[in-house]
Image 1 (spheres, rainbow over the protein chains, first blue to last red):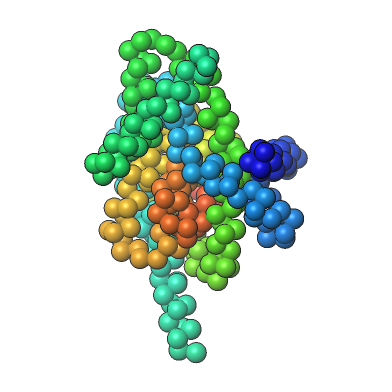
Image 2 (cartoon, rainbow over the protein chains, first blue to last red; image 1 turned 90 degrees about the vertical axis):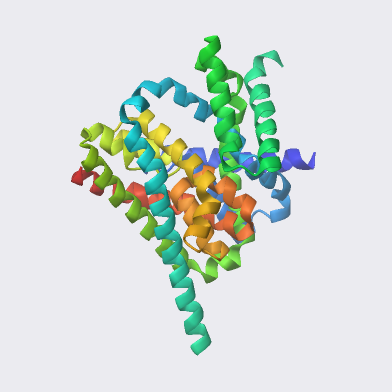
Length: 121
Length: 224
């Protein structure tokens, strides 16, 4: 029963996220609204961590498998992919690596800079 | 049970490939990639339409919604880390998103793509729901964007460990923001495996990178 209630609480935030998605004219999906709302509820203490913890960990733990049906759907677009595959490959491998490097190195540099400044204080 | 054959098949394949990857440690045995390729192959060989598989595995896709919302929990569990390093996190995500958009513009120019194809490449690093919406709004082809987003996610998921070593990222914060910014939720699945800090930062990056891209993509699309 405990997990059922935890799941129900998470679903409430899904519905709230869906509502915001329909009400606000921004290109933000309902899942992100739900995430932000649940995060805000946890920070303000409206929802306690124990009230959702195990089920949330279960759901984030199975994240990868949930993408299988969508990924299989690529077979519907194989013709399109065939026409542009060299660009797809570059985008998926090289640009992804470039974004990874830029993000990671910039945040690591800012972190080190801050750590250094703290030591000098 | 029979009407859920797609879900049962997915679970069985995924479990098998997860086991094989754990045993062998081979990057290419990525359970998402292998399961999708295996099922895709079966569907094409047997002639079962994708729509039938999709329907019989719809519960998995449906669970993506509460699973995305649940990413608030790993974020909240690392709240102190998040607050303390907020500037480094935001600067990193912004730098990465700008790099991605700039590289994509160069790529599209190099290949001389039509505007509709080119603009479909722009939101390739953000989560599917945001990306397809951006693509549709700017006059792209949402199905091309979806394919790119999924493949980018799998690429990020598979390369995460390698890239952390290549760029010498030592702390969980930089690793997490890097994974989440370049490969959204599919990459985040790997970040959650790597550690609590990685998982939390990657979850946050999905939302932040998605929003920054939604703001910048319309401006960048004018360059295509």
